[in-house]
Amino acid sequence: MLPTLRQLQYLKLLNEHKSFVAAAEAAFVSQPALSSGIAELEKALGVRLIDRTRGQVIMTAIGEDVLRRAEDILARAEDLVEAAKGANRPLAGRFRLGVIPTIAPFLLPQALLKLRQEFPQLRLFLREDQTSRLIGSLKSGSLDAAVIALPYDLSGLDHAFICKDEILAVMPKDHPLSHEAEVEPEALKSSELILLEDGHCLRDHALAACQWNAPGASDVNQSLNGGFAATSLNTLVQMVDAGLGVSLLPEMAIEAGLVERSSVAVRHLRSDHAYRDIVVIWRAGSSRSAEARLLAGVIGRA
Image (cartoon, rainbow, N blue to C red; front, side):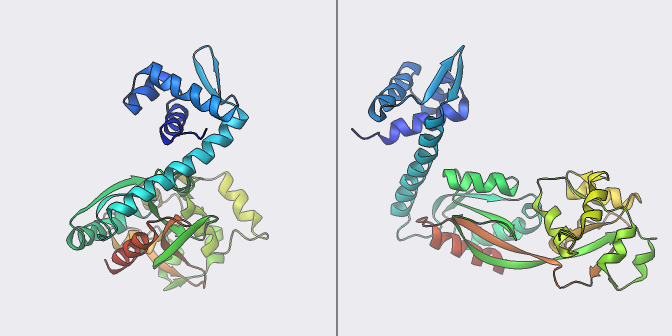
């Protein structure tokens, strides 16, 4: 006896909500119906998927493996439905797009306007989050595509290029380097370097722009571990404007007016690596790959 999609959906919701009552509400069924569905799934597979102790819901080891496979099956089933609905209408209906925070406010405004003009039937659902979590959502089927920056590990994913985004040096207006047209990355080492906190890929891209993520750059990494870190680009600009140090910012953020209300100086880096690639990514083999490529093209033109 094969599991049903409904049973697999119950398992996914139970893992998300960690409660039979909450999972049942999310599935629009009664709690006994959901419990029965999970029991039938366990019987069909011949294994215990859930440990029920003192009101807690804990996945067993095999339950974790079944859940991962269930999410893949559900994602493919959703792909099937969406592909059938939009067979003759690309980018029509629901499309769930993730975007990282260092891209969303600067790239999306014009892109959304362009998408609305070219695809009026598109219902775009946006989620802003860090790259690692967006990729997890892609692989679990919670998202159809995401806009991120490379380099990043894209195992199991395909991607389409949007544009290159230069990484620029930002410093207080009275900083000695503000008189230079271009800044040598090595020259920044004498200043306090302020970047986004761990978890934001822009931090890694900024270090790569100066080649400070290489094995021989341990002195920079050590100084960063004990220095300042910002939670957003707006905060980062304010810290630089206050004279707390220098930073590295993406060109798209500066062109969008991020530093307009500050008095910081912006300079190009003298480096062949001072850029990040902005791309759209999606699950390898997804039925929505053609739409994701189309989306990348529209965003690139915007």
